[in-house]
Length: 289
Image (cartoon, rainbow, N blue to C red; front, side, top):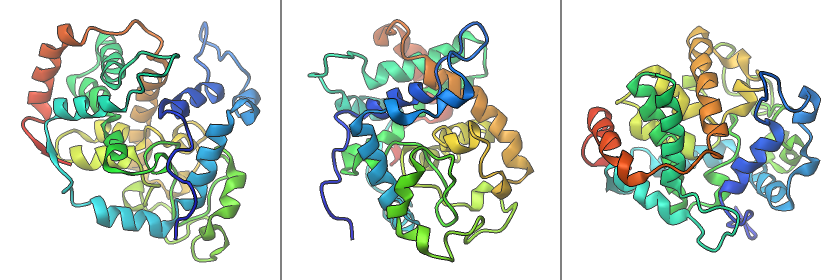
């Protein structure tokens, strides 16, 4: 049973992404702006971000994830084109927020334009365009802690390298012997395709796009918030060789997502024809969400 005020731990959804910059500052001159030890200094995190992770770590249980998979998969909430989903996601922008005027569409275009400038394949650019579209879960009534945040496997021991690991003491899976061993319900080397991840926008957009893109792009979508793995090198005991190969692509993608926000906002009108053509190539027409 989920009780208490669990719907709005953060004032705005982007607070989580901004908190990532405290942990993983943008490199300067090829070197990190902080030491490795300072990257995991969470004392700077706001009280709302701490409360977000307290709720996330308390309620993201194995049973909760299985229930959300049953609720949302197969996809049956609505039908939208990719561009309609981008416009739908734009309603998450808080017009009263004095700190940013960047819309969700502009962030998606910033990310994909940075990828495009570096000459990556069109499927890579498309992955940048759609990577956050799973956040429409908020507009379906999901609380923030079930939409954003660093992701992690459920059904096995929670890593100490996950942000705010102390909050897992409130998660009942932590005291269940079947769910708290290193492998839990899985087997060593089983492959991440057999592992249930904490529920959120990564898994959701992966499911929407999973038959439309190459594996490299699908890993970017499914695991771009899996910081314990692609930044901290945790959970490698559950991975197979294919996972390890594909995670190099996740690591290539991450800087475009994390460090493109400060750039000049793109012109949505000017870029729309290019991206509508890209959408037509990879995910034309109305999709199931």
